[in-house]
Amino acid sequence: MPSSLTTWLLTNPPIVRADLFSIALPTGATLNVCDAQFDITVPSGTPGWSGATTDFYASQYGKWSRGPITSEAGFSLSANGMSLTCVAQQGTLYPGLDAGILGAAWQGLFDACTVNVWTCYMPLGNWGFVGNGIETKFLGFIDGIEHIDRVHVKFHVLDPFFLLNEKIPRRLIQAACPWNFCDSNCTLAAANFTVAFTAGAASTQQTLVPSAAFAQAVGYFTQGVVTCTAGKNAGLSQTVKLHDSSGNLELVTGFILPVAAGDTFTALKGCDKTYATCAAQTEASGTIVNNSVNYGGTPAVPAPTNAI
Image 1: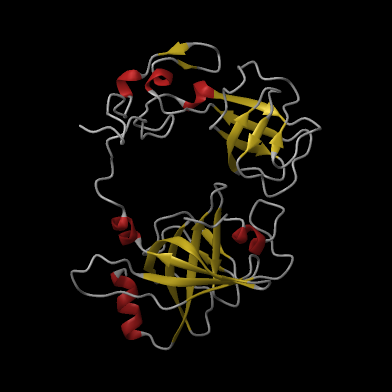
Image 2: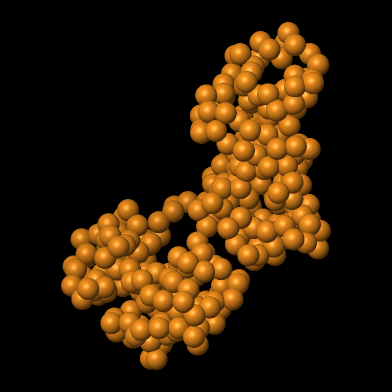
């Protein structure tokens, strides 16, 4: 809490308060909402606020509110949490998509999203004035849905301590490479293995049929990632189950909204995490790249059934 806000709170009762929520969505958009009756704008330069001028909506994306934030003074590394609830009308849409916000929650479009919570304090009779500063209240990640029905969804949010629940050691001795394809450990550039294409008339939510055949061999995009760049599913990504013999992309999970002819996508090459593949990665242009120096697996490790 900025010192200017502390001083003002000690000397200027009564006040009114509201919570502000910022949720980073997987589409790249940010959902900014508040639990107030009217919208609140936080100007750039407000004490306790480091971002640009931002509007927080009271009703455009439903009515949002939080539960108590649990915390403790001790040496325990257990995660603290809170509940986050959205009550939405039938026509309330998920930002940037032609899908209801409750349906999007059911489809997992809030899973693991980062949640920032601030509290703003305003003088009684001067609603919306936050110039005295705002208080940072909580930072966490949506861990799952506690309850959902036709009118509301209640999320469970945990602070970053939940990351300490990860099993140790993080890296196991295994033949397969543990890196994600084209991540900072892999070091390959995703742009060199990505192809843009347009969906043809036969495309469905589960299977994408390119309007022009891929130049890459069958199987090139198996286990890869396809991202919609224009269309009802813009910003959403799905994993490719199979780049089949017809050149189509069959998805592990279909897109949540219909795919129309003319929708555009990008497809990132898949990787089977084997040493042989890493030693001869084929770029979209056909260039062969030997990336074995960055291979993270241990291909010579004995199989688990073999005695040592």
